[in-house]
Length: 578
Image (cartoon, rainbow, N blue to C red; front, side, top):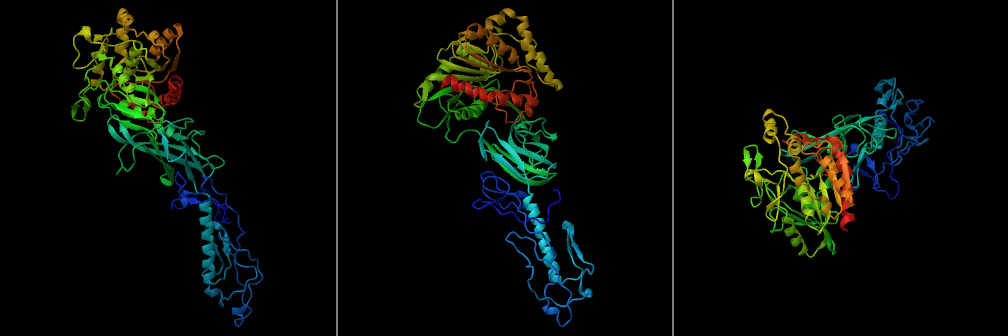
């Protein structure tokens, strides 16, 4: 903090403006002290109001010992130091003072009070010197108060996950290097953990820091990125004890390790009017329904090869918050792996192997949705991720009732299945239609690639897939998904550096075949992105590299691709289904 002007008064809020110290998001005042900042309810720092010029209150030397207690002030100038309410020493005010001589002064040559430039004459009564010190201290308090840094989060203390969050610092000393730190508790690859990011910014000429338009000087990310502090979080050692709510992100403004301001924002998993239930007809499923009395268009959400209910739990409530009745539908639940070794499947009623998964399961889901009074069954779309995108495209090519398909990191063919229950080689397809296995592309060198894990190297599934496709072109042709039979509009999202499979190349192939058939298709290809594109750009992407499988991409590229694709996805679904 730079040198402050000792002449300033404590700021006076404008009439009708509710001033608060360190007001958190939401506008409620708190007793945060000087560091919290002086703000009005509208969120603006009050301008410091300049008061009268300070002067040194003095006493003329007594004309005699007899007259010492009755003299005037010597006729000196008399504008006092401003104290908010206007404390002054009158120009001609009389006061009674004791007779003094130089031997009674603590500093016969005068006293300079700190760095504030207030000089006292060399011979003052003690109570006058104490009053001068008090006034100087008040000037210091006023200056600190007027220059306090504030951290503002908009639109408020809560926001739907995926919607923009804006941070802004005001009141900093121009040129000051201050740190913004973000922290949250969330699930990583190895379970719940503490995630943190920070970036050092240089305050501009107006004392502002705004990550929407400013790049950090150093920190967890580079370049101008409003989401940088969110996606660049990385796991850090746990701190004692955690008190953060689910989705809560704590934001701090720091000068070194000294905290200047603190705010928090909670990224909500769903809108307040969305209700979530668990249909008994489908193990692990989630049915999320928006509020309102209208009948809503519907989506069926299909996760990827991770299996279980994770995709249903995360995506169904979030997509429902944008106006869709969403059925998150698990269809596969493999055994897991924990610190002590293998763990049982989350959903034992579902297949534990990715073999001959029945496409007709979606017909059952459609029939169930048609029985729901708040669902318009004439407007049902499919949303699939990875193997779920393969599922969605293969099903939609056989089910004319599908009105839209969103395929995130998709495949254009059906691939070989896997798992402990896989039967003989002639039946190991990933999917089946009404009891008959679909043609599939075999892998080449699958187990050889998995051997990399024993040497501490990531498994790159793209290699055995591309090798199998190159070695068996006739089987690849037979396994091709007939996307030209999907009358509904299709959205494709692919990553050029996807190391699970070539989602960008396969998305282009799908788009080309549909374009030749004159069908509505949107392909979003991100050349440097990886496999992790089924998110909105506000969650950490730094842990993708910690997966057992190589996903490709980079944290910054993946986050920016997600942030670009997410609103386009929502717009596509609204246009196709509303």
